Amino acid sequence: MGASRTAAVFGAYGHTGRFVVAELLKRGFVPVLCGRDAHRLKTLARGTGLDVRVASAGDAASLDDALAGTAAVINCAGPFASTTAPVIEAALRARIPYLDVAAEIEANLDTFADFAGRAREAGAVIVPAMAFFGGLGDLLATAAMGDWTQADSAHIAYALSSWHPTAGTRLSGAVSRKRRGNCRLRYTGGRWEHRTDAPPTLQWSFPEPTGPRPVVGEFTMADVVTVASHLSIPDVTTYMTADAARDVTSPDTPAPAAADESGRSGQTFLVDAVVRSGDTERRAVARGQDIYAVTAPLVVEALDRVLTGRTRTVGVASAGAMFDALGFLRALAPRITVELHP
Image (cartoon, rainbow, N blue to C red; front, top):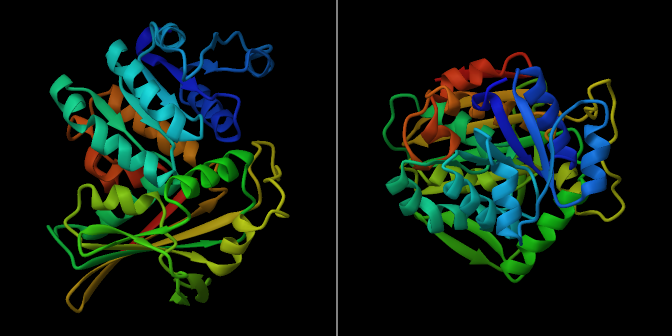
């Protein structure tokens, strides 16, 4: 298999990383298993013949060795506040595309702020937040926009049947909270606000059969970063069903457990993306199973499009800016089903 189908996966042995490795193999890529824990890498690689390369975000030389001879790198290793910049730097040195699955808002903002100019000048491709949070909502909002060049507001509401967080989710959340001083973020009027008040609880009318559900409003996730990075929409808000919000913040909620042979949990999701202009509303809806597992087809489809030249720009760009949003979403069937309501 040529280098053009070889992809380094940094954090390959993590919960999401394992799904990404499996998806790469399914799609005919050759994953190179990378991370700082040699034992976990060797355990993951046992019986597969896959290459193992021990590397740490704090050791630039080890990252250079890990990416040598690969066509691209997918960063699955959180907390991304620590790994994003070093792995992007290594990708720029290696002159290969970089993609990550970061849901940390601050890390996503840093990627756009710190690397946009350099990546554009180098003709490099950097796609942050190419995951359930960040990538999927951005693709849905972009598809819903259709021929609109601007809108008044975008609203992305998540209905999760439950949310059993991984250890990585808990750690990344703690890092994000520390970085913003336990404030919450809100994007309104075309700028970011740090808020200290409690987010509102309200009702969101999801498409049937889910229907109206209580949600935590202004439950700001990576989609707000990605949508605002390229769509002319001054107010972007995300919402989470109240039960799922309680799940992810409770210290007693267990980690996700496999419910089928692929390792997916039984969690189901519905993502309702609505863009509004005046009195007119457009909507795109996605449904699927397991928010961690579904990140794998998202980021691997993105990788395939990058390596085959099916991109719209260079530099740092979100999923909706980098790819044909509607075509990308249709390519995810049947694991994600999408409906458009123009």
